[in-house]
Length: 134
Image (cartoon, rainbow, N blue to C red):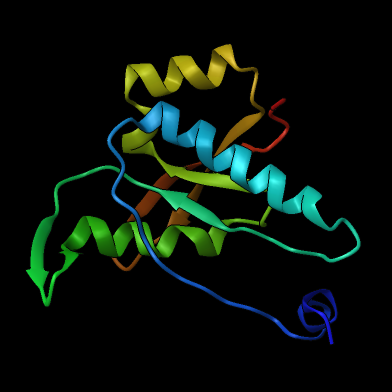
């Protein structure tokens, strides 16, 4: 049985995080990866749900692996659940960076803000629709 058949029969869920250094370039890279994944096998409904946040974190090296902890990591880990799989969710803190805002507007990416309720308050997020031309 080839991999395409296996993929069409099961739901694959992978989670992880990456620490980025160039937010606007990283948004471009993620949109490109998402677009390539969606176009790889159009007959298979693949989705890549992505959420990006910015903030401080604690990095600890254990057994030659670097791992990150902190409230910003936890917040970022919750963002993909608001994605539809053909968009990228970013926090308001990330959108507020001038280079990110300029990149989004200059790239003519469709975007909209929305609010989600947390335990304590409402949080503003941004949905970037992946209409990006690669």
